Length: 364
Length: 185
Image 1 (cartoon, each protein chain N blue to C red):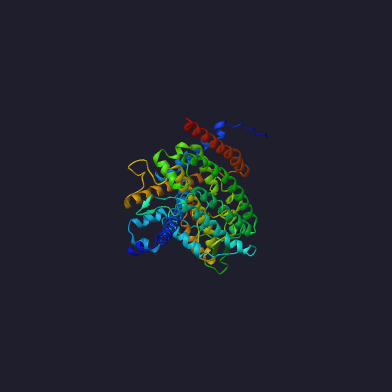
Image 2 (cartoon, chains in turn purple, cyan):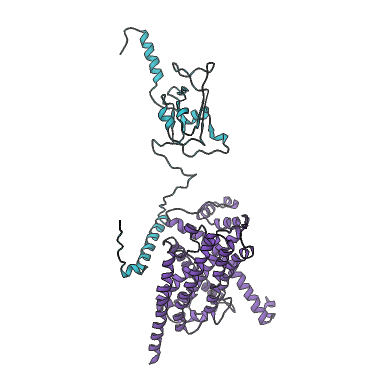
């Protein structure tokens, strides 16, 4: 591996960034998306007293004596079948759509969700590398900037589809995502007043020194959590999709891989939101015991930190899924009421209270 | 009718208590299915529902205790059948005689188109011979339309035997009794 050390720092940085991007996207995000769909189906089944998917059995299962049938019952092979199906299905483009935007929209739905992952520190260090794709000083601002682009995918999809259902879905999504972005953005301001830095690695370091921010700022957490549900279009805020009212919402006219891209976008946004919550409120890759709160010095510790982060994130993902099968959908006016008349004032009050408390503490 | 809407209390307006109880309910169902395995569904093609007695499934022809076709080709079921699923070809003057002694005739062919049949049970109700019964099969499948038209052989094979009053046998016995004197009774 000498050739790596012979490269100049810029080249090394580029190489490792590329490597991290590939690993995060193809070895972490994509499998998690695929299996989150399976977990979604299984959890929904169990909550509704069913068994869920348990049929897909590729040819090699019969060579595995006990494990094979067990994995089939778990539905482990369903995501593979789902993926294969989306590639093989006919990619139908209706005649009445605006073609350029119709093709552009799925990509625009996926890319911001993935870009938002760039600033998230998913581990401390592995060797000399910091486990974050882009260690930006403006971390959180970047995230909000990118996440707000996500709405364009949905709006374009609705506009391009040239169908009433898609159009209504995208109108709702634009209203919803823009309203909740404000509450979401304001909910995290108190955190950064406490931390004094926008860099997400610093946020984690702050939490490693003291208590997790979820205990210091519970109201901010509740607002952020609810807004995250709204931002990712999950129930109880899945008005843009609203299967029961709008067929499929903004992706009614899509099929095959284009539809799958919207799906990947939605679940990647869920991953990004969960990861963001872990970083902001649950101490990121740290645990407050066994010396796990300091940056790793060995490779084992480095992997342990990544494991801790992924575990915390998956727990939050399960919460996302769990809540979906519990609550009915909000009505449009209730949604707006909750966003503008409850959360925005609450978040503002939280900022003011935090400011006053901080001022009182530092005044003496 | 005017439904009175009670004003929500502070806690109710917060949504949070309702949310927690919702989590409780879903968790209860989840753990009941996941840990205790108490699912309410059935894995259909492998496990099949056992239908209760008197279930109105597919109509089949039955044989009597001595293994003879009970149907006498009266065609009442054919006439009463609302979707016209039954087709009977009577034996005609030169057809095979009835299997049962004393019965006049039996159908040369008896077809039920199971694609048309609505399992209404009129055929069973109208049959004077107790020869056709709605039985317990509810899931009939085939690879072609032709396969779904069940002929007499198939209907009799599927129908099995029906232990009922053997009307014609009794009539025959009675008639034989008439030959002797004094008549028993």
